[in-house]
Image (tube, rainbow, N blue to C red; front, side, top):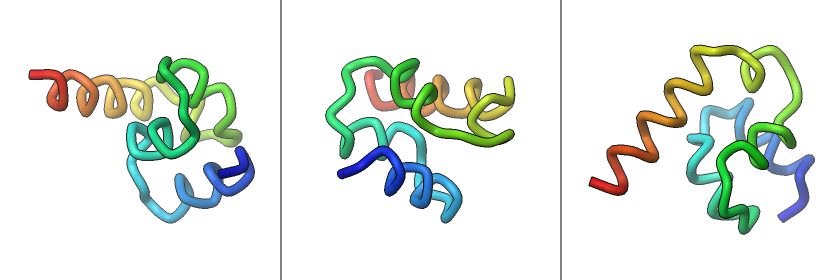
Length: 58
């Protein structure tokens, strides 16, 4: 999947963690760097993504 498709999926409401997996990134920070726009850079989006990762690892 291309990073631009990842941005489209993010805009459609797909979780950042799902996009991370589809892009093959180990680090959520790398995925967030690819996602352009206000939502990807906001603290709220990062907290949401981190919360999802923590829930998946529990």
